[in-house]
Image 1 (tube, helix red, strand yellow):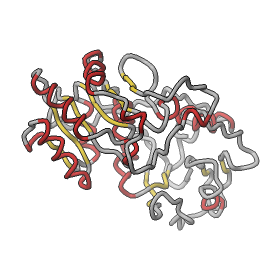
Image 2 (cartoon, rainbow, N blue to C red):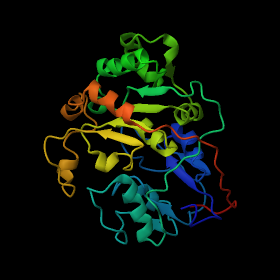
Image 3 (cartoon, rainbow, N blue to C red):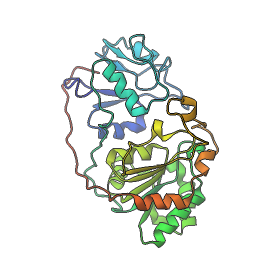
Length: 311
């Protein structure tokens, strides 16, 4: 969108807490706070300006996410749920899906163009293995005891380990630290986005479940091991290659064209998914040891806009 509309001001409608992450892309000028209880879609957007030149529905295939955009009366609306839009493919990876949407409307987009520049901040723990035991839902949360077993082995092998988590995950992170024999200083809780990105960018590796930290590690190019359960990595996983290892144990052979086989569980369930529980600490340790060295990062350029036009 930025390349196609270099003279426009780009606004992203999203929850307020994502403002720093949006700014870090260099492609978003302002975050328009938009949220609703639970996982619901806001019924309206707090936009007070003139109708935007263009609006893009990057939430799903409607209709809930399409209605508030139509209410803005944009000059152009890009969406799967719109009659002019492309067909929705439930078996498609998220990166390919949204790039295909733009391409359909004549805006070339590359699913591989996902790199995020490291912030110009020092890391609090350069060269550490970052272990993130939390996840938005219990179905994607590997047991604390297993995270601790991996962290304990890494510590004994001489690797520095840092545990990350949100402020709401304090008890989980402290339990993993205690079981792993790590000092309280090993826990990095509630880091602002830029400090978290600096930590991940300089990390030796990242161990994480299927959650936002995994996507951030991918964007920063930091080697990672990502644990999957209710959803196949073919839908939500990092791009193929030696830098990122995914571990997933489905019930049997999976047909890449079968949406049901790619989402065998409930990603928002409260209990750890059976496929996630099939992953052992031993194979996680092996995957971590097989990762290539972490790259050296440098801050990237930012793109400017021309005031007065919105997309």
